[in-house]
Image 1 (cartoon, one colour):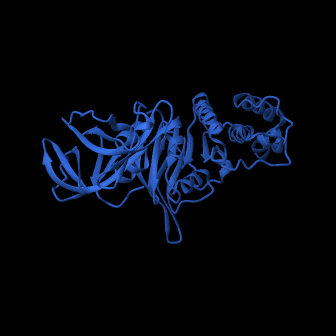
Image 2 (cartoon, rainbow, N blue to C red; image 1 turned 60 degrees about the vertical axis):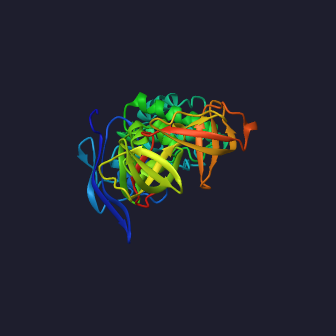
Image 3 (cartoon, rainbow, N blue to C red; image 1 turned 135 degrees about the vertical axis):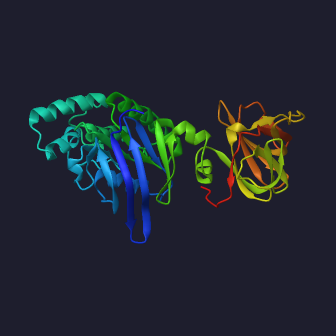
Length: 364
């Protein structure tokens, strides 16, 4: 990894009896880094500590090796973009964007130079004299981004910046924000509860729960190799099952899930009789047409009833009802006609496909 720009070292923060951050240590280089987690996980608290809007009870914040833990926000070299844009309604686009430079006491030539640079970067040319009420949602978001970048910060913080945009505009802005980060070559710290956004945009991510880091690393590693039950259930379209290990067979455990046998790789800490959480991403399952007998060598094979087909273009979500009254969602190419609703079909997956952990109640 390239040179570290932002360092969080052993951060703790309590609000009364609520532990919002417990020994959080993160290093961020010139990358788009996502802080991901459900509401109340502590991700926004961490963003506010980086920004200087909250002071940690313990620990340090360093930017480019400089300890900024006790510095006010305007002395940290940080830009911020908020969920609700927070534009001044009585100021023009240009006045909104250059406001941070005005607060820093920059001269007119510097303000003009920086404004021209950032307005071109985020494609706001020709909107200088418009007011926020005259802008679309996407234009408002671009103004908020420009204001965060105009002072050429060392780090840009983004707090759920796309939450108020419609789906299509959100997808467009995901690509744009990614482009801005690559062009500028500074860390973007992106806080969100939306896993799709985090997976689309980030280079690396940290998943938080109850003020703690559950897992941190490359997004592909987190998605395909989760280290905890919470991460496995939180990322992706995941079928979550719980059962008891009944046997060990040819390097695999056999898990009884309400009368249905599931296979998974054996691990040293697995024991017969242990209750485990069994997670299986829907795209790792294959659906087989009625009458087709799948090969069960090294695979889990189950029969079920095709309850519904949700067609999504390049793939479909198949809802399969099982004999144990549970349901599994399968994401596969749309080869089975919706007219086959209620038909008996088989589904299968490789034994190595699931992620299995000793049950801890930590499901998302």
